[in-house]
Amino acid sequence: MFLVFSCTKDFEEINTNPNAADRLNNPGLLLPGIIRTTANRSWDNSFDRFAVVADQVANQFASTYGNWTRADADRFFWSNYDQIKDLDKLIAAAEEDGLDNYKGIALILRAWIFQGITDNFGPIPYADAGKAQDAINFPKYDAQEAVYAGILSELEMANELLSTSKETVIGDILYNGDVSGWEKFANGLRLRILMRQSDRKDPSAAMQSIVGNPTAFPVFTSDKDQAALQYLKDLGNEHPAYRGNISDWVSSSRISNTMATVLKDLSDPRLAVFAMPTPATANTGTPEYGGVPNGLNDVEQWNGGSQNHSAIGLLWAPRQFAPELASENAAQSILMSYSELQFILAEARERGFITIGNAETYYLNGIKNQFTYYSSRIPDQFTLPTPSQVIPPSSYYTQEGVVYSGTQEEKLNKIYIQQWLALFLNGGEAWSHWRRTGVPTITPAPNSVGYIPVRYIYPADEQRLNEDNYNAAIGLLGGADELTTKVWWDVD
Image (cartoon, rainbow, N blue to C red; front, side):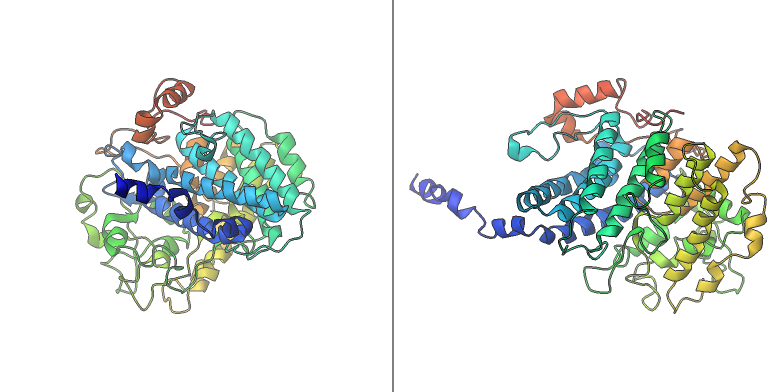
């Protein structure tokens, strides 16, 4: 009894961090951890789950989908709720001190995180999220339509805050304190979200207002201002793949057959960026690339075995594979690219959502920037590919599969294919893009469950600890929490 009393009577004083006030009064101290954590998760989850279900990467252990369980929800961004708590602290501190730049940046990160979570699950805790300090321990779920409306509003508010505030921002490892970059990111995200819900809500007025007033609503003008985390050579700040497991990169994961086929059919030089030559041809002087279908129980039975399969490109190679070639910082974690924005604008112009610009110009801008971007990321020591090998000849743009001609459906299909390629290893965006457009065609393999998942199932703790709100969420989904249950914007 004495021991218990002695240990607990000063509990409040002992467990009050004397530095907590300083942290809240300096919101920039929270920024690096939030940005690094979420950007790393975006790449990690893309590599081991999102790129698999989008059929860009083949993984023997993940691609039959029969072993996808509630325990894997964190691989679909559910774990990012821990960052929402820190962002809310950051916003509260910024509001208290009138630091509008910090608040604007935090709102953009919140919106990007929530967009990723809701796109993967559908209805999610949004208005009640991160409110445990307000005694909300069992958050209700909001319909995806309401979440989208909320984050669009937050992004618009962020753009307004960032356009008027002048305080210096520290801790910004994404844009190094350049708030104009954050403004462009905010408006790019708005266009992404507006397009994603376009089969449910006409985005014309909102899109036109953004594109028609670049002074008030700036957007990316090149890959130099796209939202991409630049890694460093310092320990702990390298690209997450650099110290990764070599077996995951070489043995478990390969370029998918769908991705390899699309690139080969277009004679697309990104094939040498996205994939390694097969081991059988790596040293022959005539490298070949072999994709593997998703959904096979034994990939060694495909096309003569692993000697004829291509691992993911050297740009993302772990140090263990090739210490003299692997790079800590050549690859970036892309949150939103200039190319993606251009393809969104191309589709918007082609479908009549905006009246500004030319659809073909937007489309070609998106393609050409892919090549110049990847060419700029190739380290000097690479011999395959070299920067010049990533730039295609002019004939690339005149071939039937690329030239901007045909019916509107054919033009849109070309936009969709190029956008899918441009979203390689970009979080969950390639999967969401495929779910909305149906492009490219992805066919379930014989050893899979017989379908391609179109959402992820909620974590088991939600069933166990937040049962009433979980059940309400299932009602919003139409009564089923399944991999085959479509989210709100997934109409077709």
